[in-house]
Image (cartoon, rainbow over the protein chains, first blue to last red):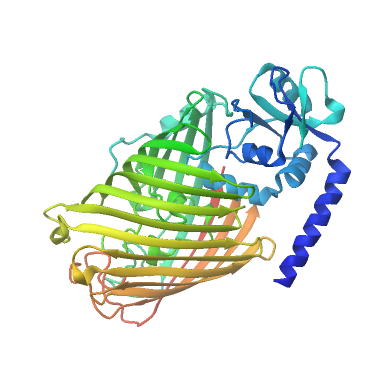
Length: 142
Length: 360
């Protein structure tokens, strides 16, 4: 139990370090018509794990993911979602093969995600802050 | 077995290039799984078959593959279905399950159709070997042979109501379900059940279940004496996954209004992940009041080859009970002595095998 507690402390420290290093680089984006301006970490996790199909304001949400091999996805899942690739594979296998849900649509690159979110009022995505343009709105993480 | 008909896998594959990935309304997602398995036994001679197909000459009948399709019909309705082909059924392709879901909210949904049996931690994805450590999920709990433990079933036709409460890292749900279950030699009518589940961040899963139904057995079946009897089961399960240490246990108790058929069964499993390797140890027992059943110990190794592929090796030592199931005819049916179709010469028999598991 003591070893597990130490691992937990280490994980928390690593997460803080990761957030410090990357949190300002990856941003959540929605369509400009979305009335939401901020969203909780808990709500984002629920949406990206397929447990919630709605924004906190009650609107339908369709999340979009980035390519499996991209750095932006690795950062997003380690820091925001808190799951590794193998954990995610096991998690989604159980949901897919029971009909309980499928993982978010995958697009390759920030440009594709920006274009997709800009065209859809229910969309939620994530990109590097440096890729942002006026076609989307940034959601603050609270 | 099911009423939804058989589907030609070739036509499904032919349709695949037209399917698009996505989670939007009208778009379709395809996923699949495959198990390539070989199993054999140390028991020798005729009449030593284990669970109907494992003999000293070996079998690949646990080999199976499946395709799952999922689509968001509109903002509230979803449809999903799974087709499977199994070696034990000569690769005839059939619908495993197919149901529509109405998502009223994140807290309440309704399922209608042919729905995978929800009792048991692994029942809903029992065909997808990639999702669990063993070659076969513990047979003292999950075996569905005619004279096996029969705690779990394949699927039911009917309705399921799912109530969900989401916490910061927890998910608690109550599943109320009912309808009709097809079994090998008849039906389980007036079927109803409830499952209460708790999940803490996929680290800890707890499950309690109860089902009841009336057996309708075909007149020619050796189990015809059970026709009209009420089948009632209670189950409990715990799964702990600390990424390195893994622990699973499930127990069941069921009655069929025939005193000698009262059954308790279950298993306990421990495993430890060393990177991509996970050795594990499982003890299981299936105990029928009439004096038959079996006890087994499984030592296995699961290796992650890639993020989509796993290799599994299991060796199981089975000790069948001394007494034969009086309903089973020796040398012709599964389940005369434990899951053997005849009494083995040895007190303990080894069942061994390997499987390659793939999801895509």
